[in-house]
Amino acid sequence: MTAPKRRPKVRLKAKMPAAVLTALRRIELASVPVPEPGPGELLLRMTAVGLCGSDLHYWRCGRIGDQIVKLPQRLGHEPAGLVAAVGRGCRRGFAEGQAVAIEPGVWCGACLACEGGRQNLCYGMRFLGAPGEAGALQPFLVMPEANVEPLAPRVDPARATAAEPLGIALQAFDLVKLRAGESVAVIGGGPVGLCVAALAQASGARVVALSEPRAARAKAARALGAQAAVDARPEALIEAARAATGGYGADVVVECSGAAETLNTAILAATRGGRIAVVGIPEVDSIPVDPHHWRRKELLIASVRRSNRTLGRALALLERNDLGLAKAGYFSKLLGLEELQGAFEDLDDPASRAIKLTVDPSRALG
Ligand SMILES: [Zn+2]
Ligand SMILES: [Zn+2]
Image (tube, rainbow, N blue to C red; front, top):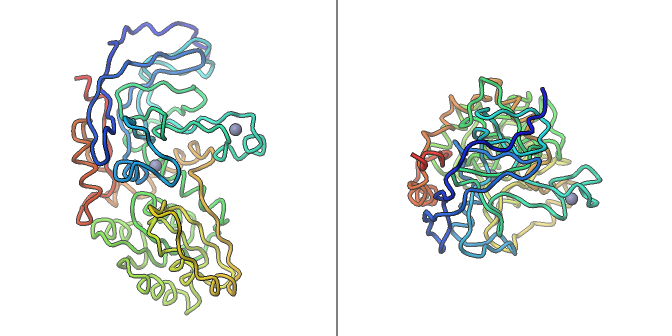
């Protein structure tokens, strides 16, 4: 395709409503300027943005460790939508109206991490909705075209929002080198935990146990093929993992809950020589570790930092029948920006029946 060289021809309204965190536990709509695409950038109309555990962390605590938001802060980093305008100098052939998914991390390309191929660890990373950066919970967003991937006709933008949590599952299994036939235990059945379970099953591994206190999410885990969906007591997961593996424990344990004590649960649920991927984001600044079981088992423990250029692979997997996520009830109906405060309150409620909440910011344009 030839590179479109025209300027955006749509005259946009100068202002748009954006969801802004104005205080702890308070999200409101504010009027902000519509961004303009610079050279090599696309203006994107946000039609589906998934709400993530890290958004909820910022809403609840205003910080993740030493990453502290300065209010007001815009949130959201699981976006998909339509190309609204193509900036000058774009070369990838995007056309207005095309459905796309978006990689939320913009890396520098020049630091040691980027040069080593680990762009997710970039020293100059700019990440959508992170402290100081605009988020995707607004009707329009500008991104470099390198961060944008076209969607196959089978995958609509609402489905494509699962590419971000699924990318984290890919990253976790890349790091611990999951093999077909292995046993996997998952701690936490939130959106990422469910994507981990779905990907494990699709990779030919067996999810022998998944722990999740919320009934709707436990039910989704069972629908995705988890052999046992158990409550959040450490013993429940450890027992289920051992029972399914002749007493040995799981080859791979993926921690997706962020609860403080779960690294020890993972250590006890893993087999000797097993691997643990730590995905969940704790709210505390220090977590307990039982050094004796960890040491004796010769475990490999990998921390997972978002995902490294997994968008294309995640989209290819979503094309394959969503890995069963849709059937398991993962996707909800789309909410409007004005429903966000209620959505965060719902996700924060231990009795919530929500699995994943997704917002359509473009609806605010009427
Ligand atoms: Zn996320
Ligand atoms: Zn870099």
